[in-house]
Length: 103
Image 1 (cartoon, one colour):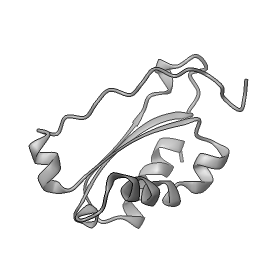
Image 2: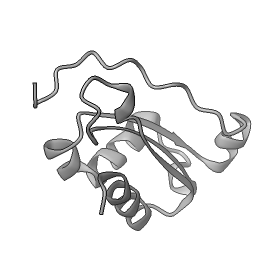
Image 3: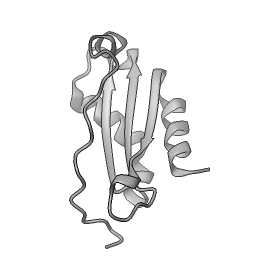
Image 4: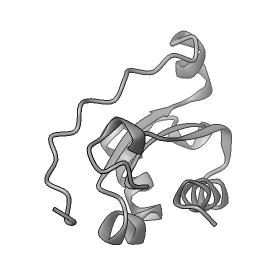
């Protein structure tokens, strides 16, 4: 199973997602390995939660991957209403500044 598939599977198992998209952005960075990802998670579970709480929830689900495999993770979390208001659009990920554990 690829890292992208592993991330998708873990998030789908842990959170009741209305929409889930895991994007491998590794090709946009110097090493090109499976270490840079963007996740877009839409769930009713995020209702009433601040952005920090939502991100902590994602970080907890992916704690092993973040500690051992992923260099960068852009997290975009929405309730279904927020996602509709955004017309399904999310910001581009920032440029990687390097500093991988592998460097």
